[in-house]
Length: 77
Figure 1 (cartoon, rainbow, N blue to C red):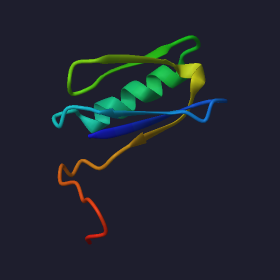
Figure 2: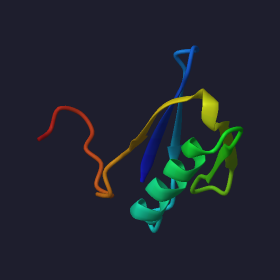
Figure 3: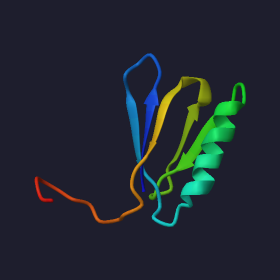
């Protein structure tokens, strides 16, 4: 599952590829809880085991990609 996190006031975007078995509902709940807490850090682990921490106060948007593992490349429909 692909995830994109926008970083406030920088224009930078963090892109992660999470494990296919990642539970979308649990991830959304984790993001919601982190954003609701002052001073919290959102910690995610990508499919290679790398851990990424983003301070909740710096997150401008959080985008979950499709759960469909098939990726389309080019102009194919």
